[in-house]
Image 1 (cartoon, one colour):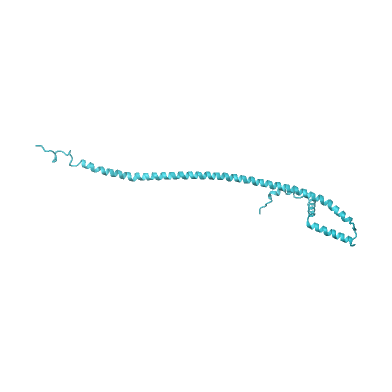
Image 2 (cartoon, one colour):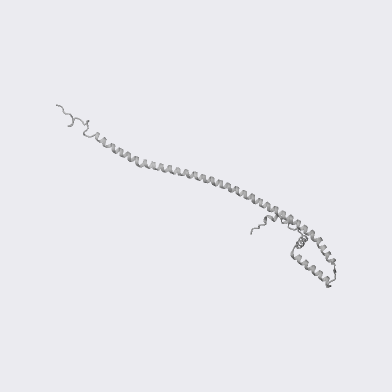
Length: 198
C-alpha cells in the first residue's frame, strides 16, 4: 500500500502540542477533551446534579449561591484557556509546516512534470528525425532498386539480343562472300566462258 502521507513524515516532530514526554501527551489530550460533545454533556450533567443535590438538601457542601461550584469553574477556566490557546498555536504551526511541505511537494511534482515533458519533447524530436531519415533511406532504396532493375534489363538485352543480332548479321554477310568467289567469276581463267580468238 502506498503511503500518501510519506512526504509529511519529516514534520511528525511537530505533532505533540506540548512536547514529546508523557505529561505533554496527557496535557494535549486533556486540552482536546474540552471541545468535544461528550465533555459538554458530562459537564452539564455534573452541574445539574451538583445544583439539584445542594438545593434539595441531599448534599449541603455547596449551598446557594454555589461558591464552590463557581470556584471550580474558575479553576477550570484558568487551566483550560491557556491549554486551548497553546494547542491552537501549535496546531497553527503544524498546519503551516504541513502546508509548506505540501506546497514543496507540489513544486517537486511540477518540476518533475516539466522534466518529463522536456524529455518527451526531446524523444519526439529524435523520433521525427529518425522517421525523416527512414523516409530518405526508403527513397534512396527505391532509386537504387530502380537503377538495379534498369541495369539488369540492359545487361539482359546485351547478353541475349546483341549476340543474336551479331550472328544474324554474320549469316547475312556469308552468301555474298560465296557468290563473289564462285565459278562464274570473271577472274576464273581462259575457260569455256572466256573470249574466243579467230
